[in-house]
Amino acid sequence: MENNTTIFQDITQVVNVTKIPVNPLEEKVITIFLTTLICGVGIAGNIMVVLVVLRTKHMVTPTNCYLVSLAVADLIVLLAAGLPNISDVVAFWIYGYTGCLCITYLQYLGINVSSCSITAFTIERYIAICHSIKAQFICTVSRAKRIIAGVWICTSLYCTMWFFLVDTDEKVYTNGVVVTCGYRVSRSLYMPIYFLDFTLFYVIPLIVATVLYGLIARILFMSPLPSHLNDRAGGGSVHQGHSNSTSNANKGAVSARKQITKMLVVVVVLFALLWMPYRTLVVVNSFIEPPYHNTWFLLFCRMCIYINSAINPIIYNLMSQKFRVAFKQLCKCNWRHKEAEYNVPMYYSVMKNFSHESNEPVTEQEEVSGHTTNRCNATDDDASTLSLS
Image 1: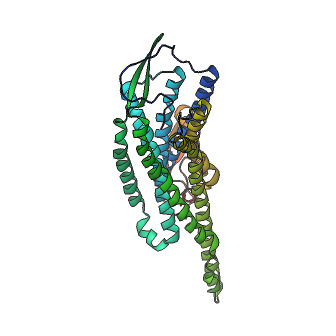
Image 2: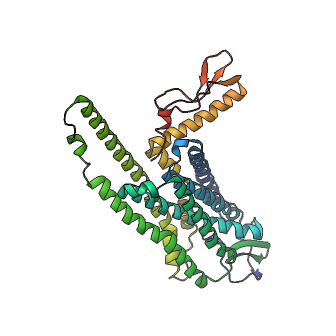
Image 3: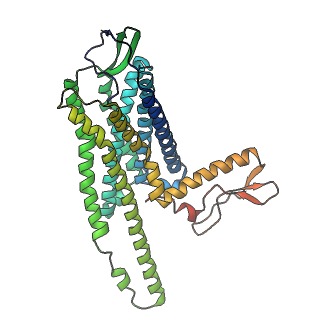
């Protein structure tokens, strides 16, 4: 990601006869406010996504595994890309040489892993919907975990080149010395690397998503639902009722898949739109001299990137009832856990296994007096509604 610093060709000192440049006060205030707001919301939301999936057994599905990978990548982007804004505000790099290397590396790692995670869940959805028989053997949680591990390992190795492409630079002004973090090589040498990144982690994922979601839409929204189930109910009321029940279940499954697909399409579309300003700026600057570096437009591009990493949990909450229930359950259980720990003496009773037909929770927290006050474990019926797919 381009930092709002000067790009240089070597690490020798550059002497300026001017004073240290100072960013306008309104720019500092707006930058701090927007960065704090967006990154704060995004960090909290992505942590909740990870906790919801890890703590709710029924949420551990292949699709949700990829969403956890995406959430962790977005967390890295928000943390690593948000920190340099502090340096921009004070007008010099405050994290040193090691910070320059590590922050740049983590920025690209988070960005590239998020793109790969989006591609992975797009392919998984395509197989699950368009090749449902193969999906029983291909779209498994264990396979998803192996794919995610491979994505992180390969991307981590790919991004190691940034350790050799950035460095700190000292510039001497009449009233002091300013340290900046920027590119070690000239812009002309950097551009092939950028276009490789642009192709691998933006163009190809969007092409794959466009083609596969088009095929998914043809299956889900243009193909009629199979009607043979309704036509088979030949005689008895028992068979008729069973047929109707099966038909309703199939319709419900198709409806759920449509909703999941819509949600994931929104994630992909926002990824494309929110990354477009920055990607377009770098492409344009590759062909014009001097490059366009309007301060406010650069700030806008950076905020779009932060929003892309922060908005996904909000999308899940708005478009997935199961994620919404899981988020509420997580917040409710955390609040009640604190209430039980600090206000009311509790003990755990009722530790019995139960079948899927039971509506009783696994455990109940009860007051010493005996009546139930808190229930933090979902029932089977409740928990069954939490899984995304």
